[in-house]
Image 1 (cartoon, helix red, strand yellow):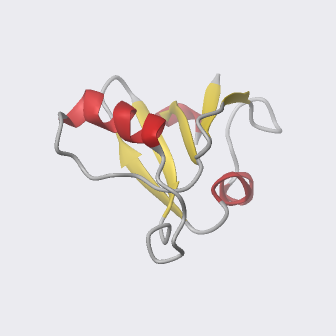
Image 2 (cartoon, helix red, strand yellow):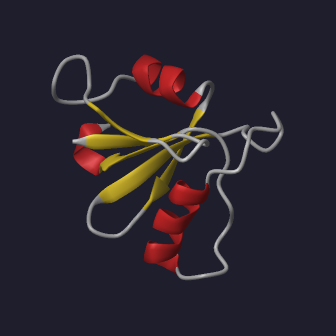
Image 3 (tube, helix red, strand yellow):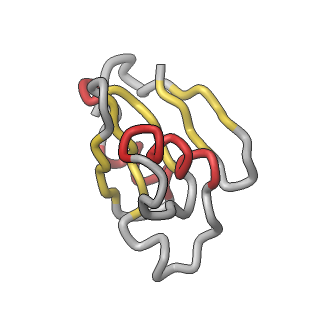
Length: 90
């Protein structure tokens, strides 16, 4: 099951409408715009808003921590609401 990391620190479990894979439109609604995939270890990925910095979206501490678990401290900071899911879910 996928998780939505919200900028307020809330973590919400989410599932695709069809029960298997998120559609592009679903992902865009969750991240509020164009999607960008960030690959993680263990067949996981983050789905972010590609323009989050330009749109001045709030910092996402939890998603940044998840990214650091895969790539180490000093990785980029993430902004906006972000989906964390398996690659096969999108």
